[in-house]
Image (tube, rainbow, N blue to C red):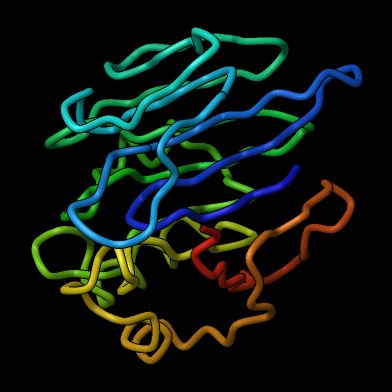
Length: 204
C-alpha cells in the first residue's frame, strides 16, 4: 500500500487486489490557496464533511459522503458518523487504515471500539478550530494504540493558518521514524509493541 498526503485532510491510498490497482481518495476538497491537483481519477472517493467544495474526479468513482459501508474491488470501507461528519476505516492488503477526517473533538468510546486496532491512524493535529489540538490528538493516539501514526492537517501552503507539525511532535512525545512524500507499507513491515510516528510531506 502507498500512502500520500496532499494537504489539509486529503490523503491518497494506492493499493492492489489480485494485481488490480485501486486508488482510494479521501477528503479531496479544493483549498483557498496553495498548490493542489485540479482533478483526480480514483476508484473510490470518500468525503468526511459532504460534497461542497469537492475537487473534480473522473472515471466515475464510487463516492461515499455519508455513513455506511461498501466494498470496491476487494477494498472494504466503513464510514462512521461523528459530530460534524464522518470518519473512515479502510481494510485492504490485510491492513486496517483509519482516517479521522476533520474532527475537532475526541471521539467517544463506542466509536473507538468500532475502529478495532488500526495498523495506521491518520489524524489531524493542526488545532485552530479546524482540527484536533496537539494535546487531544496525543491523548486519542494513546487511547486507540495504532501501530503507525500519520499526522495530517498541519501547516502547509494550502493550510497556512493552522498549527505546525512541530507543535504536535512536542506534545505527543513521539519521534518521527521517517519523513518522506510517500509511505510504502506492507503488513509484514508493521512495528510491534509500540506506536511509530511516520511523517508525510505534502506530496504535490
